[in-house]
Length: 633
Image (cartoon, rainbow, N blue to C red):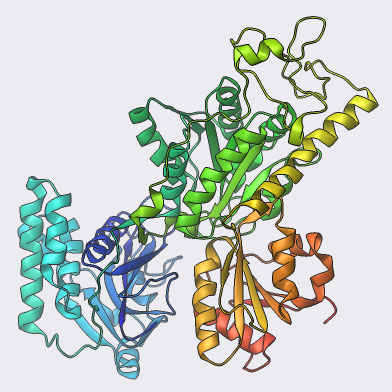
């Protein structure tokens, strides 16, 4: 975090409108020319329970949440189960204030709703305020909201106070309110805003706090999107017209966005009874000639194991989405973790024939989801996009031009009826759908209803026309052909003009940091700080999990003395995959792991590198991260 940026945390209870308020605040500041990045923390409850969202605002591009934050708007939890201090879960009403003080930086600002919160109930509050030179504004937001409308409008009052204290032009917020609100609720919200703004400017010294919002200007038109938005819009642009699913956090966001938009393009969305049915319906739609997808989070994806194997055996293209969360079992369903990698790579029966992408940014989520569809339908193979709650839920301002690619309705390797007439058939007249000698391992398919395209689709091993076969020679031929597709896909990806791996930092750096998925932006910010501190560091964010980019990662590891692998799990799964593919580099790879339900902050990676790789620092602070040394150390 720098002095030239605002990191605003709004905290309250689930149901208090924290997510929508923070999204509108971020959108308004983005419209004013600034770059924004949001981070969301929420409990697995419908209503009640401490939740917050951070909005990081800068005149420069932002890739990560910051190290701590400098402005707290604490609304209190109006849905608290028990406001008593000695309740089983503590005083939940006060948690939006009491549980957000540890990460508030020195000199920061606290605005709290004195209509709901009593700071005297927070242990050592006054002492901590004095010790950290915090600027405190106790404003009765609840009363202001009730005077002009409803209590829920205290969020609007809190945003108004933020504008007054941080020097934000009120018109920036009011303009968005006029665009987003119906006339019925606009006028009372504007009255609440003006009353709160005037109250603070008249009764407090708003010039004293050092927190302010910089001025900025975007080079091109931005949009505010999450990884879930990007995945869904990519699917639509690639011609996906069917989705089946069952709600499960955090995958639900992709499912919801697709379900909202599919009818507008003639598509179909089905919410079914469980995840087995969801994946099976997607396979049926794809078999019938429609681009289809399904998905879930860890527990639901486990149920998709059998349909996933069926897709591999019948060579039915489909795209599945797996949104990781902290497990095992239900675990912490609203907290991010990267511990489903091995699950996604190896679940199902027999040898895996699938493509797995792990995008690291909103832009990559869009690009790689489109690529996942292309490869699935060109190579008749399931493609999986794996991400986590962090990438799926964080909103980031990104250039709108990134999403200007042309739509792609192609179904890939399919035959016309004229081509089917010339294709090989068996003596019964069935089309030889699974030919041994297919180029790149891809045997073109027919679509049900085509003349001359009849074949048998079965989950058993089968001969070219699809009939069940346990003949050893046939088995070897079919397995070899199916596995050949992975080698062909790897060759195609290697030949792409733009790599799906992301490189960052000086090419001739002495040390490396590797990561995958949502930690990419945080690692890049850490690399900038490390190089500014005199270290020589570069990074690679790997997005292709299967087939693994052996040549690219080998070249990166060959060029550095040591490499720190950063990921959010306890078992170093990505490092394990890398050593499986590139065992000769095991002595170069150390791990920095975090699995407490919160993503890395840049400072944690900087501290981990300095302490353990450069051997130039103190031990890792606290117990929030874990270091695993290289093999042989």
